[in-house]
Image 1 (cartoon, one colour):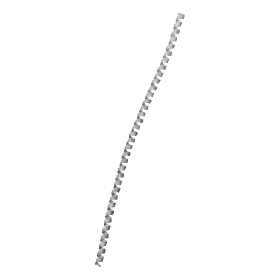
Image 2 (spheres, helix red, strand yellow; image 1 turned 45 degrees about the horizontal axis):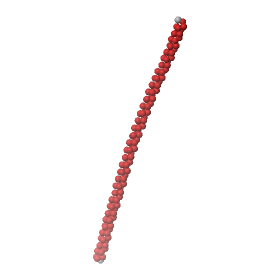
Image 3 (cartoon, helix red, strand yellow; image 1 turned 120 degrees about the vertical axis):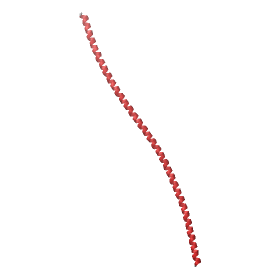
Image 4 (cartoon, helix red, strand yellow; image 1 turned 180 degrees about the horizontal axis):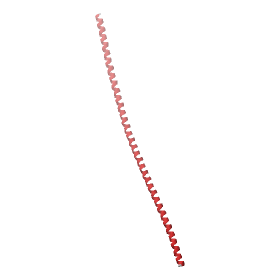
Length: 129
């Protein structure tokens, strides 16, 4: 039993050593796999946060685009209203000028009538004397 048993015992010891190394190696691999899983989960969370942030930025850009469009439309409406107000003001100026011309014409007629009346009174005064 001596040599064969000794070899068998050494082989068994060597197998136990290898088994322990395999167990330690497997444990280390499990730990690394768990760490990798945690890192992957963190990376997914970061990716999701970035995706949400990008969506927020996209939505803000869309809101800004809509605000610019609303501002542009309001500006066009304001320009149109200003043009309408300018046209109305010009119409009022023309109407005022027409009224002033008519008033001046009426004043000329009244002045001519006053002269004619004075002339008639002067003629009457001469005839009475």
